[in-house]
Image (cartoon, rainbow, N blue to C red; front, side):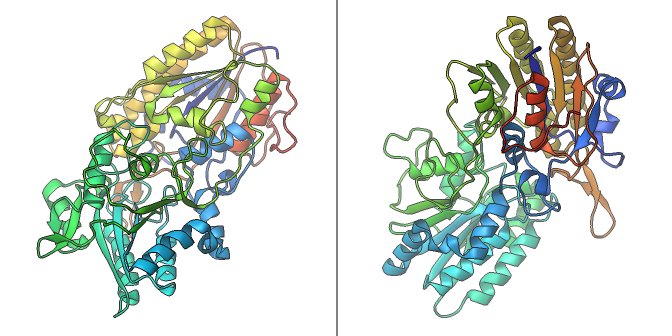
Length: 524
């Protein structure tokens, strides 16, 4: 290879000419503007079929985005993987389903479903839950309890009651003298249960106590809970406090010995910690679990294939092989990956095809910068400066042929719904991009800039009534792909490209033959 490659992933920074809620356009981004004005670049797809999701109505996310970026291929992912399993019925033929359902049927105990209640197709899809509820009754399950985490992040910010309504309607149709299905607990996804990267274990502890022990503020039903908590807090769905459904002062869904529990989320990052709590033995020390009921637990997928979390799962994950890291290791090229905690797993685990360990201890160096445990709109620059510091240090060390980093700002601050803070977040990334570009010039590196999906580019939308409201979900917009080399203008083909075309393009810039399984390079 002639020059080292530095890849900058601006998480959540999409590309669209639409001005409504476009904080990327509103922000002052002189570095990004200059790169686009004077260098080869184009928009590439980061959602739907381009990242292995069912249709182009499905927004991309950081996990499938980094899978595609890191492996140069398109695998069936998340919702599509589960859809195929449910449609074929193979999920119900799995040993795990037979074990968990068979146990509650034989013992007359309760089957619990825990997960994000929406059709966002990022972490979960309500259709999967509804299908499993119907199958559970068909197979003889008598009692089901649903622990519903509220979204408002991958779907409209205050849409929870729509999904509660869908679930309640299905349960009403199923309930009879032989079947008792009810919602037992819930709360906002950013308040309980769904922490990631072990950044905030108290969130998981709160969820554990609500779902497992039925400890929390009590309400007669989920609709009453959501309406009351909205009125009291003015919070959007993702930030609503936890609630417990109770009768006569007793929770209706506390877990007992002999019960079975299915976490129906398919995305891994925010499913790992609660899975660790359920699967953990006596050595588990992240929080005091109190009485630990003897339940059978399974996830929708195996969320970590190397650490085998959880021990039991319903659908086999995609077996991602022939990653860019494997190609670089085969050519003896040393690489460096850095981000802060919020996206560290994305530039390591997901980038390497859902592999926790390194392909080569000798040729891969990773750096995690701890994220602040606070609302990201309070500090929208996050750890961008520190990430850039580490990238610059890696460049100047002259040890690495490939350096990659992720700036989480556009995504994590975008998810808060705070437009002003998101504008600052995008500007913070642009400032650090300028620093990296300068050092690339000095050290004769090629700079490649892209994103994994959109978010900060579409933070307002019109609802069904035509009113403008805050949007906290990812966008369906493409993302930029820019190549900057001070010595050469690398010509790119024009066409319909996506994130999976990035790895072969990087290999092309290095002069390395890509794997036969890869998508094509964007280089002419």
